[in-house]
Image (cartoon, rainbow, N blue to C red; front, side, top):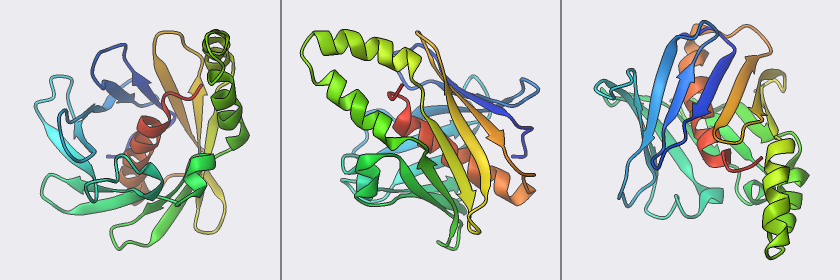
Length: 204
């Protein structure tokens, strides 16, 4: 997996999870679907639109991590069973805004993913809590205010930026590289960001 950035991650309007990842040339990188009726939070990644060729699975560890997202570790594996890495929520900090570590196969942090403006999520929650009127305002808020996320490496340097794009009928995220991407990083980063947008798609 060595796509050309920027990437577009787009949720199609559908009753099921239907996420497509395409690169700067418009080439399909992955199709993502959540496993239905599973006790554990599990995602399947495919190389084709027909979902015949599965390349990876992303599975939450433990029975309750899907519900307790602030404690979750989601392990990314290839179909041969080898581990690519994991997305680890940063504890209670995740309740305030998106805050995750992206771990390599050795369990060591390689990147940190954070919401650039976590207070917007708090404001959105306050608005949505107002009966009736809050729901109407929240729809406009979702369209006009879109979050961004920055991915930094272990040296604290920005490596990628994720931007939510305005859309009424779909959820679209664009991933830009802020420095050259090493081939060994691409697989971990792309799949880690898939998990990020699955967690954050309802914001903005």
